[in-house]
Length: 413
Image (cartoon, rainbow, N blue to C red; front, side, top):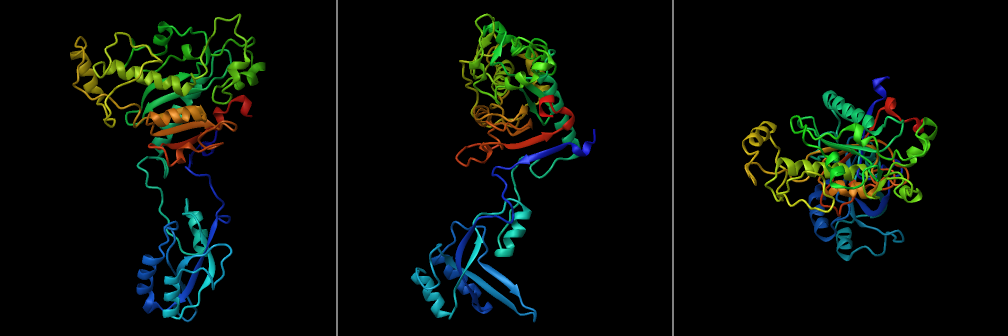
């Protein structure tokens, strides 16, 4: 497979707009003498500030053929039905009369440019400012070769987790600490599984007895059993299995009959939710003294984590190991700060998450979300909605689509 076909595509918070079809706003403008520019601009900023057009530069400079520059200034906003002679603020009219200006109406771009291409088109109408994204999230402006390789490898592992031995496909989620390249937790859809919801089943989902370096990676042989209640698991029914992916069809479980099956059903147990629970159980195991004194480390859907409300502090794995040896029999050891939810972690998903999963990842303070396939009907991170661009939220993650043609499922071809 040609590696050039592999891509990591950033999904911006707002939908892309064609550079040549950007919304515009009408304004009053006028040609001014360069020697009066500073005085006029200071006065206009006081009486007619461009509060909703902060990206717009007040002055436009045009260079004539003879070398003499011409300066144009934005005086104030103009509505759709206004003419040059009415409804201009009185203070602005005073400036027009004082400097003998000749106002005219022109169009400027209504919103700030989201890309360099948009900015270049905007400047053809009127100069604007362009500020490239300055998020403190690696990957927004591109990935290094080493980081790209890590992303592709984690996505491959996630895809393998999603494929069962019966050629059935489920959605899978893998939470990763990118600083150390460690898998924190992973899971598949559990909306319908053979597990009965008992504590034993939850412990199986998050078994810490064989942890190596405190990695809590769920066994793919266990998670691959989900939704195997289909009457025929052959490749001929692959399309039916595809419909069973929870985020693609949230109400699919309600259309099934389980009277003759020992299947356990829970409509909210999408892969992301189950992985979040596994991560929380891992934290309770590594930091038993921070709000939890339970002896069992199984996932409890009804319990709430009351860990430290401070920001996540990176945990030195060697210190965790050493501390674990020293305090194995000590209840409530507070020698290390418990991580705060999933702050700083990445999550890898096969399909773009639905609104429920996307919001759960907001609450968990996930740093980056990587998904392989779009969710055209219920996707919340690009296909239908863009939760990452909702300004009212108190946390925003970066979203990427990982395009790997060799990993496309048969139903996508």
